[in-house]
Amino acid sequence: MPLHGEFKQPGGKLVVVDLELRDGYLAEVHVSGDFFLEPPEALDDIVAALTGAPVDASEDDLATRIDEALAPDAMLIGFDARGVGKAVRRAVTDGSPRERL
Amino acid sequence: MSTDTDRFARFRPRWNEFDWQLIRTGAQAPELHMALDEVLTYEVGSGHRKPTLRIWEWASNAVILGRFQSVRNEVDPDGAARHDIAVMRRITGGGAMFIEPQNAITYSIYAPDSLVRGLSFIDSYAFMDEWVIQGLRSLGVEAEYVPINDISSTAGKIGGAAQTRRGGAVLHHVTMAYDMDPAKMLEVLRIGREKLSDKGSVSANKRVAPLRQQTQLPRQVVVDRLVETFADLRGLTGGELTTAELTRAEALAKEKFLSDEWRYLLP
Image (tube, rainbow over all chains, first blue to last red; front, top):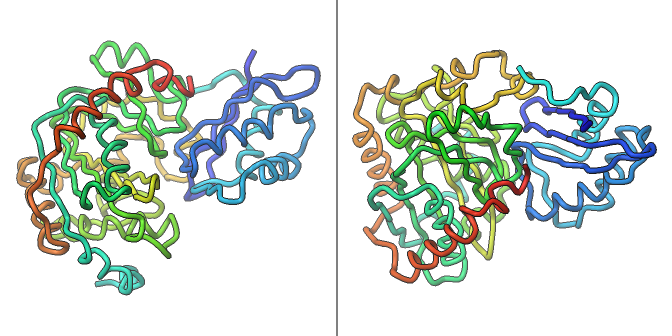
């Protein structure tokens, strides 16, 4: 069952993470939201950085993985790597499948 | 001018270095609008087309998702089907827009990226829309820019902008609410709790203050005033799409923007 987590930085944009856990690692990771990202292909680097991360990776660990995977010219606007990490932690710790207002 | 806008003083004269062209055609399909934005951005970036303001007229209902949004997170498929609303994805980031042709005011600006050089991504949003804030104020709307990309007023949010930079050009487009049917919008768009966490309101429709309600003017009058404001401040020459641009955009609309691969890029 996919897990779902969201995080919105105050004054910023929403980051949504959907993922599955496989043998203690993150798999089938999807990152979406109303953020801005240049170039758009940088989203693939963020997803790749999260895929295979251990389930107990902290927000910091996840942010570091993302920062290291992004090309130097990537621009995250309205969100940052730590916010993505927070959304992942929320998915992993209390990510009920897709809960809506 | 408030001090907030004065930080753009040294950048503002750049607008007048260009011979701005206006494109204002009849109603076009949502997928053609998506495609025209991509085609015209590259045309301006390559120098084949002069910097351009394009006023959109919508031919049909649509939800336009931001480049990075997930369809199932944003759209209620039953609501969309019930109200005959197509789901489209644009090339810029940002949030979903709910479009009914007579309720939306939409425009795009295509400019060489030298226009925004030296400005942060965040500042360039407000910079690209200074003229619109001025146009709205001339209609009596207390409009202001709320970073990152909201056009707002004391009565509520009016609209939102999105930008991308491609091929030497900046694309900046905006949709504003002229009118709205909040009940219908809430049947079609999913507005989550987290998204509203810093908005101080859990009611999506209360956050929006359509221009009709604020001006009591016909939509066309509002659009005309905005175009006049741009023309007064920046200069504007009437132009049109070339046959080549339209042909390319029609092909791209069909091959890319109507394809499930693109529309469901993030399912």
